[in-house]
Image 1 (cartoon, rainbow, N blue to C red):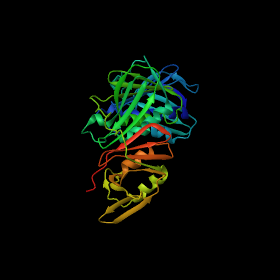
Image 2 (image 1 turned 90 degrees about the horizontal axis):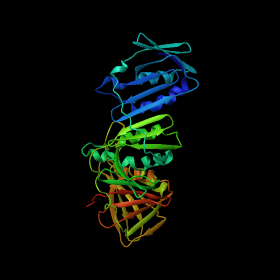
Image 3 (image 1 turned 90 degrees about the vertical axis):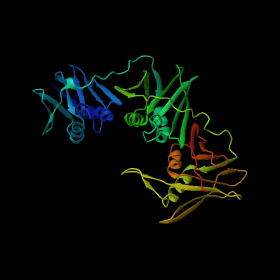
Image 4 (image 1 turned 30 degrees about the horizontal axis):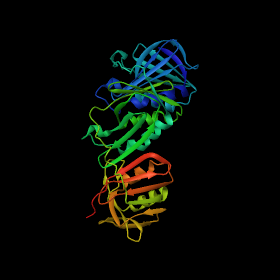
Length: 379
């Protein structure tokens, strides 16, 4: 194998390929990128068993002296290509053991793996497609994926559920304590019901971040293939029955509070500075419970109490209020922050029911987006 290619072209494709690379794997071969060069084209493949990605490069800068294939250490290979400054990069396979990378005055040698050990990736047949704008796909992921469960105790809840009936796509995510739902009218297509892992959707959103044309979806029994540009992005689907969430959203709301979204978001984040926090991971802190109180004279107050640090309280000024009595609800401030950030609207409404029934957030510019949060008792 011996070829030369423009570094920027190669790096653009490697950035997409990296979405399928596992951080670690019981199969060492999957930590590599499979590269196959024909007389005119370059194919690259990555897979972590949940996600598989393939790119097809047919660029004028690609000059092939000798076709061939190999498997290179994925992360090291990508890091080298990112760091070098050469306009073009050349690759030469030596005795099927070492890949020599030359860029300007630099030379790098990588020990390669046997391509015969790389598993055969069975991509979905490209038939019966559904086309959707990439911008719409990215918005759907942004508005729902964060509400999926992070724990594997209920695996089906770690995915986003998509159901298509009567040309209406319903996209739902829930972790049992909150729910995000988006409705979308789509072209005429056969009904389906699938659940996509949240991690796959997060990687897909990154892969199409700078892509603004249509993407094409292909469905199989347990897989979904997304095709865009020269990329095939395939994910497994989750097995199991997704819970029926159709009756969770209340039908009436005796209390409706309309706020400026940014003002409310800022107030929630300020008050939650003093709320007790529970560490979820090395890089993430979970906001604890804060309280929203609506008094009889229609004043709205956010507050929290932290026995070891102190208290916080901030009054909110609603843009509009509909109520038939006072209200006190407690909820996770992180849930509210994440829900608010999913809206494009400048004005949002908190639609509240009696007691501890779920409250619903809607936005005037997001008519098809619903965010629901389950309150906690404040007794």
